[in-house]
Image 1 (spheres, each protein chain N blue to C red):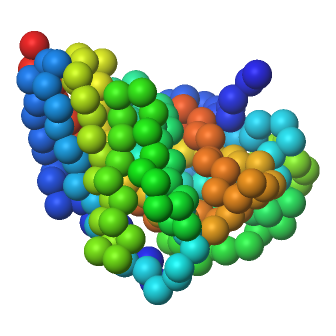
Image 2 (tube, one colour):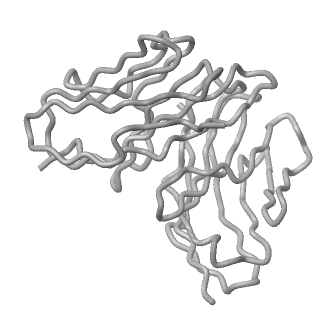
Length: 115
Length: 116
């Protein structure tokens, strides 16, 4: 069974600084997808970024980027120029190679942004 | 475009009562997922449907839980009888047919369920 581990229950960052959230996963599959979702206090689940395992290039979405290390089964999220609105729970998630299979989530990292 | 719509947003009821949670997926999406979020266990899959057909219900805790998807635009999750340990946030999510593959799931706002 696939598992996702987020080893940092809580992180904090100063406004305008950069922070990296860690995620590791375990799978025997070679073709899969990885996601980061953000959950603010409103409890919405918002997709931040997506990475296809077959792509070597790391995904980037504005201030958000990932460091995908397939051999190490590592998928970290880097937030640059942190803003107060980035404060939220962040979940790393895995799914097999289609949009029609369930997500397996890590336990989450609570990010605080200090003004 | 309307997103995934869940109702009610909050539900408070007494132990032993029947609870029905509702979900309307995004039009055109052919997969629907029910997840439960608790402090202890995090986000976990309960059941999912492809083309209205249940594919995997191994996450449903016990026989008190049941889910249906009578058509492409509606799904229900029922708990009967409810127990205090069922208190959680229940999310519904939908995703389109997987091409290109890896289409992200779109989540509803969740139902916060409290069983007294």
